[in-house]
Length: 448
Image (cartoon, rainbow, N blue to C red):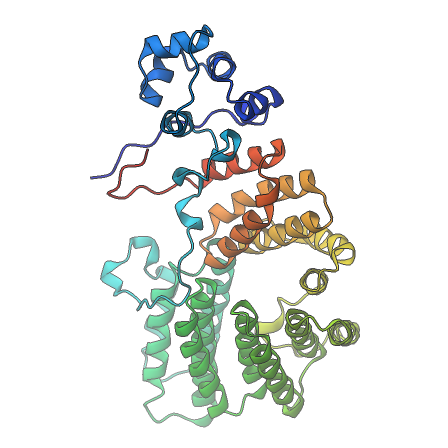
């Protein structure tokens, strides 16, 4: 049975109040209980109930006639009133870390669940159903391919806004359907077109696994996408897939692999006919990420410079593939900032990431959360604790809106970097807000 929610948090303003911080530090429970009563409206009888104390004992403490010294009692007060452990000189309490931030292996195996096990939100919508019906016709036409590409564009848009976890069953179903169509004999243009669609769907599936930090499954689908693109000698798309695999390698802390993969991607792009400057700019920035992860300042700066040089050559009539149009000026700026941030060059990184955030679409929840946590970490590097906590607090709303373990990973890293500052009022306020919007999930286990 679902467990009842734990005790309500104290107001952030109270936890961050210097008077409360001082009372906790001195373990002055008379003062602490008085503040809780006046500022949180929790009266002595409720304090006693929440902390497993007798009302008379609480009254004696508030009157100054009794002192609380036993560790188990202090722990009950911390848990009952939801006072972070560090404020009372205790270790972090179990309820302080939201379940979503608990460290789990990113390599966990998880097969796509059958469609019947999904909620209605995870099933294809009417627009996808119409595409699948169109694809089932014996005679595949250019309009069929156009409709399939349109559905992929819509998947990417919804992935940015909500995350790909709930979309994955529909994407995998459509991928398998298109691969099935390739078993029939078809004219070369239609067969090549279906290969392109299947390659895009396989890469998108791989991306949803990558964003969920399920790296083995991601690599499987990226490899499938690579094979489908190779079958029709689409070297630009092969470069795109290899660039995705390079980015994943940076997340797995395998910078050597990342550099080798992006090098292979650039080789494919240079060998392709009509590779556009935008594609080359994107690949150069992925190379910058790999060098920055290795800590190579000179090579990172050279790759950043190459990315900007390629970007300046972009023309209005360039035949850019649809999959690279996301790499606009805002993306160039924020990726440049992130590359500098990876090198520890916070003074260069901060204004770039700030500028990109101002330009970013509000509907791109994952991008806003992801880049906000980068900015918060950069601000921490520069000693701007207040700004960092406020930036991270603003990132919590888009984090909740999008299902992305990759974003959660960046939130976890920010929390780890914030650890030395946990006693500061602004950090106390951030952690309280974090617990409010990402409550610890209770499933079959009661919490103190």
